[in-house]
Image (tube, rainbow, N blue to C red; front, side, top):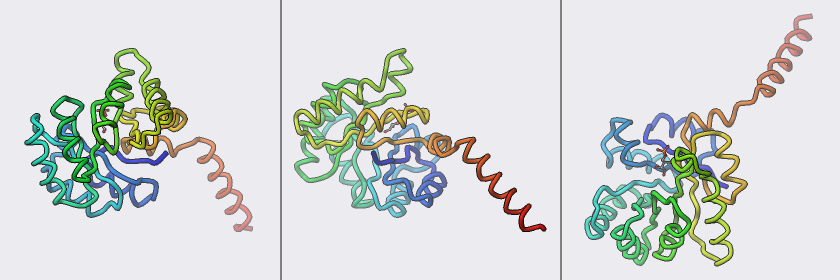
Length: 215
Ligand code: E4P
């Protein structure tokens, strides 16, 4: 499973990218507003830094306008992936864009049928939202397992991006459930890196080294 970072905070992307484990970036309108950034400006900045796919979401709700926005966003970088919501108009836009070989990430996926429809419309990626399903006292990770099983059984090459990842346990479970990618907030990436035994082990190594070299 590859790791993307789910943020529009450029400093977080830069920091994670320097650590080498980030293969792409996802954003959404809420994240861009939270970062107090202009959409096109921040997407260009991210697309220039990162080699991998950078998902930028359309704001329009009609297919024709989504396609126009997609064309504008693609001018910001050849690695820009167009994030399209799972709606009937979104499916129309996905069909048009995929015929133009423009990669689409269909977002706001909450059922396996939605994922299958998006894949058949030509999506390169689907983004099932794990955390938001958990928020409703349901098991979000089951959705990743179901989509992975269906895509494998029917040889569908659309990639599953486990989204709405809130905890290190989500990241682990997404990998085991068969997600191709998890898009993970910066704080969850950092939390996943930590282990008390790593800290204790390093402290012991350093203490032993200093004790031996002070003699
Ligand atoms: C990613 O594509 C989504 O925009 C994001 O993961 C949503 O996460 P949230 O449910 O924590 O807002």
